Picture 1 (cartoon, rainbow, N blue to C red):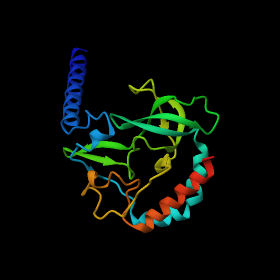
Picture 2: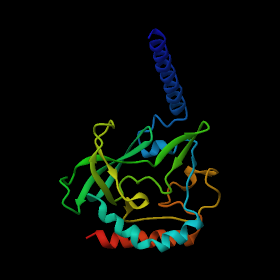
Picture 3: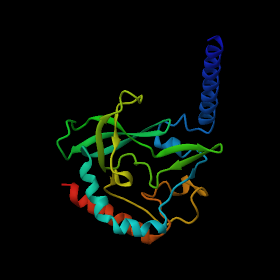
Picture 4: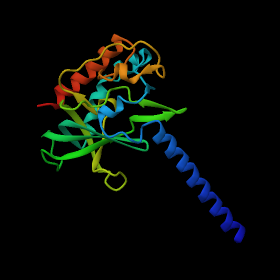
Length: 222
């Protein structure tokens, strides 16, 4: 029995030490201190995901499914990002203010909360990297946003809801800019492309992304 107790104590100590090391590394590359969208531009950050030409056939074939899947969202709003962000482990959140409610969801205009997904910043081999295939929402711009109703108050430090709809869970409604990106994922600097709405390697795949985006907007925006 004593050996079992000692073994459990050793395991607990090892887990705690590993957690502290991971926390130090996470903080050391600047991710832990992110508070605003502007803070992300201070990172020496790469990009780990862009839309590649090989995805075109799939996106074209299942275009209707991408659009129809947005019906599954429990909350649909037009929201304005505040510029405040939070990176909590593997989950990344951006704060929004609700400007218009597009379905019967139980929330109110002017509500303020975070929207979360698994995109965001991570550390790979000691370097900060951004994963997402699209830019963060820009402060003072309007977005069509799709959400699930399950609140994350119990597991995350800020009130919020989960984004619904994958790469199309938030859609910029004006001043959208995207251009083909030269280079391979992992070798692209985030600061060079952060202003683009979507990160893609060719105009062909961008045109397909925007075809889906515009169909969703036409369908759900009043």
